[in-house]
Image (cartoon, rainbow, N blue to C red; front, side, top):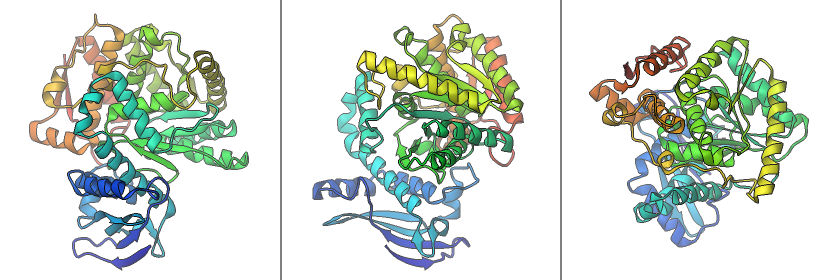
Length: 464
């Protein structure tokens, strides 16, 4: 790596210009592949590449404003260049925090290569010419499979991957609890997959690293799955050793469900509620009725009221059948781990009986309308049908979209711009559902689950 220290006039923060050579996934490429990669990165996706790369280079940032890093490093740029032996990545005025004594931190470099790899794969392999294949449920699932395989996430091995969901903005007690659960999971040989960011996405990985070290496990997986709209607000935590950037939130959610052998939910905000509703909408389908899928909601004693409110909201909107698909465990990390390991064993037995793979769950049925990207415009948010009388899985899907829109208004650049231009999103529905939704969202605000720092200004209005 060749590098040069510099400091721009536009910012007082130290920056470094560097030249790095990819390893793993990008180091053995044909000339045609290199040319296509360069074309994709220099074309319409260059701004997206720049924003995602900057998020990785500022890993560990305490801000969840997606525009903050761009304002702090306005002169940053990234170029993917062709060479006979492969590709070269040039970083111009990159954040100095990603370097030590002039050398880029190895973990940061790996995540940076993952950004280039995944965005290029999406642009090349899932471009407009493949639109017809992405109009069917099987086509979209194959696209998810292709992205994960290209990222070398899919490994034939015994089932042991636990997906952990939870908020990026959580208190110290809740964060410590996520570490304790991760520690218990790691002692039992389980690997961790999260949304890759801070808070409840970092804690389980941090706890598991200590447990894995004590058990002398050398090959460990800390998988972070994100998407371009969210990565700038939730930059990858430094423990992630396998990063995947899916094209949109729907493919990100499908990835969690397809590769995970069980899911644990810690306290969180609207993003966590979106994830819970997504999974319930799938598990409530008749096609998935007999499918074993360990699903645990857990937190410290202080989080008990949080889960009570979530549980009440689910029972009101989706019914008791939905609540029967998960278990709530309070203040008992060891019990969580034991229940999860027992659930994973059942998943293993079921996969063997159904002749399904361990590394990718082909057997779970995900409907097309849950796979197609939801663009949270004001019109789309107002049109959501949040009323009683619908099938629970259909209501769950629209409730998920409502929370997804609020996530966009909170931390995604496009959503924030829409709210700034047209005002808050309006969400309509039956009176009791809207009352429960408003109470839940108010609790998130009061508990500071919407934003890490600063005063939160709601991007929504709940209308009965």
